[in-house]
Image 1 (tube, rainbow, N blue to C red):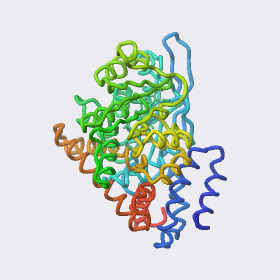
Image 2: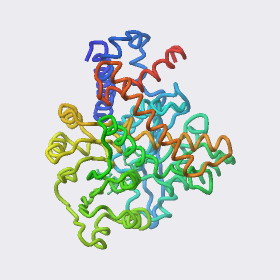
Image 3: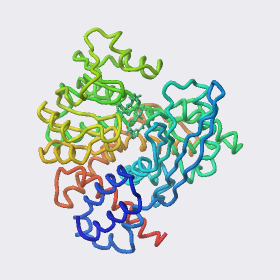
Image 4: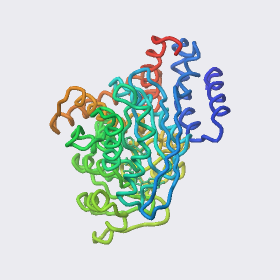
Length: 445
Ligand code: NDP
């Protein structure tokens, strides 16, 4: 790293002690900026780098709620409003016991550049809570969401900050939070949340968008080598929103996904994943991956090791951060993997990314590859603002176009800064320069 960039990174570590995921995300972006700053030194002036790594606002609050047995619980809520240069803060809410300020900050930081890549006029933010929805009744989840929104409502709005879903937050949770927001504000601000139900302002394709986008990105990367997903064996991790629709799109494009996972283990289904069964188990019954295996002859559940031990041509990590380490990357390469497209945020550790890049395989980082979700959230905001609703084909065509543009922007930036085919550099450089140019135009704010 150049001195000027290294100093900013050291400051981030000193000021945000113990927030290791945030340090990791900042390091990855700053490292990519060396050739950008060498070519355009003005990006290091006016403390622009120091400003871009510091959230504009960090909100942390108490979320008390009562369980079905009458016991009171206290969780912690977060909303990090990181950067509004390009538009209202935009980014999901995560409900998972591992959530803390460092996790939300890493996600918010990534979101700035991801949103810039979509070219849709959205800033970067992220939020969530250490609440664990697993095993909670609908009524408990509703009371938690209402308490969470009672505080969050003060800070968000259709032109201010527009949250969406993430791990542990799907259509049910967005519904409870929207209901409480509307009640508190006495205003039907459809554009205050995205990922809404279709009957009350949601957009077709939002549910599918992140998984579809990650697969479209893989397809675009393959097309640069004159190849496609047709006939490829795909290894998928996760069994939530992103994983399910990555499997769907991969199947539509002629590939065969053979795995998925959750925190209880992974499933190998050599005949190809039965998507209808997976949706029934995960979306309808909110069950575990073992429930799939019980009903699917030939599929097996593995509770030790890692899903990345399974050989395949393409890997789609769609569960969580740092789920794929250097050893797993080496195992994937030995198994013949030539393409990795990240559906999750920062699922590959720095060692894994280095291993993929050294091997020269196609590697699509999350901030580019999984941007289809937030891009379609922005399409939902657009429909809400225009009081209109597009059909599935229209929304999907827009998503496909946006993913192709993101891919091409990454390719062009990687070439401009002297590392053709490096999608990490391409995504970071293209995202950063779009935000940085506007921050400069807005003055020191
Ligand atoms: P979901 O809550 O729908 O699903 C998450 C899945 O990953 C679950 O199957 C979960 O299993 C599994 N998982 C989570 N943590 C772990 C872990 N530590 N080990 C093994 N499995 C784990 O979330 P999403 O599908 O929405 O999100 C997945 C990833 O995609 C996240 O990184 C998220 O930030 C990212 N993303 C999501 C977007 C969206 O639109 N939803 C947009 C862009 C990125 P279990 O139920 O057992 O915990």
